Image (cartoon, rainbow over all chains, first blue to last red; front, side, top):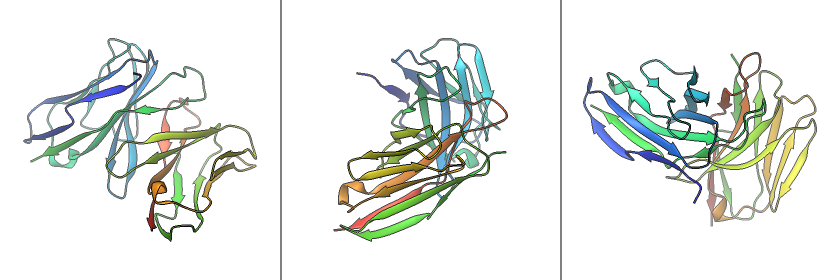
Length: 115
Length: 113
């Protein structure tokens, strides 16, 4: 089954404790992206990757890091989480490598709470 | 940077009524996508529009892309309770990488049975 898998789905952590949210897709997609969703603010892009070893900042990259060492994986790293990073995070992937972004497939989401 | 604005933010309708959400971009878009997110779920792709003035239909849903490719709309005819959710439009940014997909804030649709 074609899917985007995120882990963990739920996490409560404390300020400053490094954490990683993993994302894996089994569709051989080139494009992957992370979004955060907050009430009233919609979906905001954090980072995206057009291919292996190619990443770029989205609209809200502060406090986050990503890596794309393999095509299927795109982990989101919070080196020193803060309460303002409490949010619902979505990973998404797309096949398109052309100028027109293709259909985005989203993971189930990871709800993160930073105390 | 590019902004994608959606209105209304909320819409409550009686079952059977029509519903429309509008999306406006501050820049010309090469394409626009629409997604639906059910309560507690994740966004799911509905459609992509590419051509100026394009109109596409999916059963009771009608999608339009403006002639200037700066606005779009989603119209649902005779809403049903299964239509409940948040509808997002999204467009790639211009003047940089086209992979920076910007979402509108969404329209939350609730349907009273």
